[in-house]
Image (cartoon, rainbow, N blue to C red; front, top):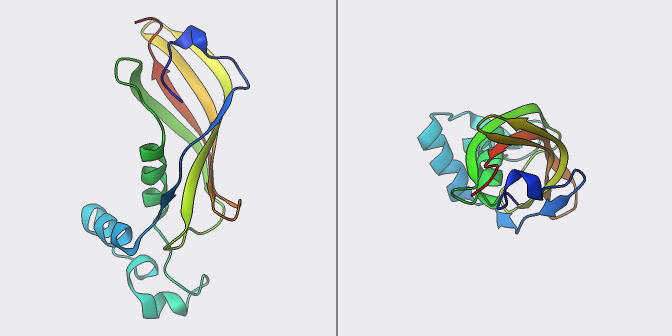
Length: 143
């Protein structure tokens, strides 16, 4: 995905990542790390009575897993530049397998490199989107 210098990218290119299955351990470790112990994520009995009928992954956990599915080649990627218009459109459950789909929608030259703007959709094994956002990555102009 993000493994080439700025000039090598063309608007309209798209990529899809490998898959990653969300586990109960992921929820527990993320809750411990973030301090977010909301019962929707950590209390099976409480969550069963809620709108989803079971525990769901934290939205920020889902985004974090997505960054781990993307390729950020050292020396090419200079910085994660930003994320806009994040929408959690469907829940992510334990045992869902996630993939990231990216489509390059804009390029902007900067003095320190170039910003690639991508429409990002995180999808689960059913093909349903769970997150939609726009991400920006600062990449090198040359090696």
